[in-house]
Image (cartoon, rainbow, N blue to C red; front, side, top):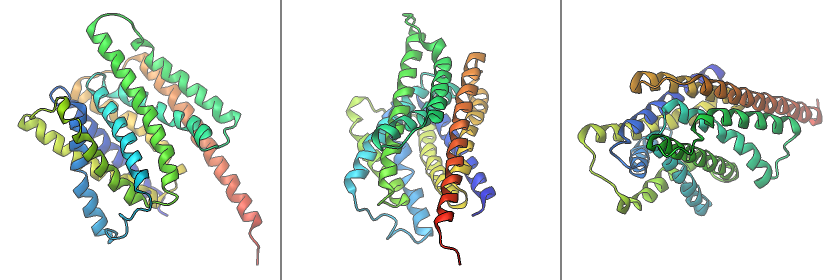
Length: 306
């Protein structure tokens, strides 16, 4: 274990993902969201294959015992990605990122319902606080005004929340998958299935992008592939509980990219909501770490000594 290296890899991965999102956002006025999904997925595949080959895992890392699980993971994840990419064209980058923080909160609830995980009052309270924060972020957008801009923003909110819920379902599904599937297989087959599934949306308005947008989309795919490798690698050097708080660095990167590239300035209301959501997330992470330490002590006490 090398926690510092794991943290650096996680931070760089999040930076790359935000750069990818910025490229997708910049191309959103010209290219439909599921066409962007195709480029993001297709051009990530060679990066993943090269990585597996370099690690000499190409022959073993892609073996699967449950192809159907990868198929359903692909459908759920592709739908989530499409919703997220569509929202980027309707809302500021920091706002999409902030609302997306609802996903881990939803995951806690789904884990209790679908996996039977025991969720105590502390975590439920933290989730409740986090959802209040999400409502604070959403409040200015909850408008029924007929103005086109506001209607578009409301649609963007619906898309982000739908994508967050789908990502939560995907996370629950992946928790089951990794019991029998290798992480490299999960990463590879998701990119493959997302590439294939996105092709079915061609009849719904794909376009021939201009040369600058074409290069942005290709770059988004390549950057996304590299980011996925860095993210996966980070967990080889540090525990998930150590790396979890760094997810919130995405907000800092979103603020920087949004301001520099798109001139987006967050409102005070949004930042208050973000602070509430991040505080709730930090409470959940802290509680999970405490429970992990307690479980570790229990295991050690049951281990025969000498």
